[in-house]
Length: 254
Image (cartoon, rainbow, N blue to C red; front, side, top):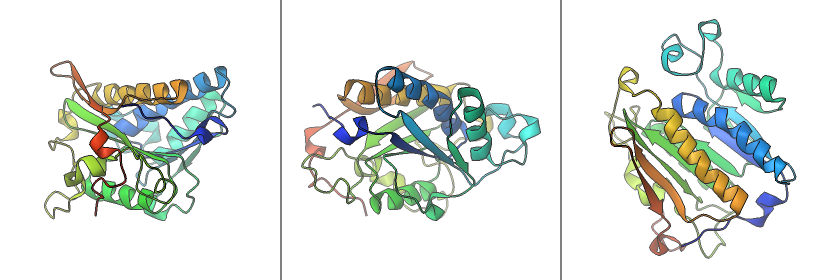
């Protein structure tokens, strides 16, 4: 099966919201300027306009595995990354120290979720379901493996579509389930401490997701909607677009 994007994505600037600026989020942000430049070089009218949000500040622990330095400790992650991208690439992207629940603007085409708790994913799911977001790209990982899933939320922008790409919540509803013990713990396939994460898992996962997004926006079609990658085994297993999930009659998350 092949999925094609909405024509409006090729007629104006594409608006992207990155939720979470930790390991996966910072890796995604570092790659988005390359996609922006590529789109412009091939004639896209506006490229990307990116907003980064994260309520956290840089901690000393972040400096060991994420692209932050000690002089940035205590500063808002999203603002630091946005300033860095703008300064290097000559962009005008925005960083905000906030959560998606407090975000007022809904003029977004893609939400890229880089969070690692069920609570945070539920917040994204609720927000995209009550907005006019076209796509939700979710990333998550454990020590040496992870997944990325692109889907179309069941919201006013997508409800009239005969064929809707299922989101991570449609395909794997357990990822949103409330669990008193683990609700604020990473909601990937296993819970791992930051010190046990393999080097480059975040970059590997982010660039696989960005590669898929590039094919989607450059070629105008997609034959898969995500994948599972494992650095320990060297495997990448794509998630195909299954006909059973392409209709609006597919199971809707609670």
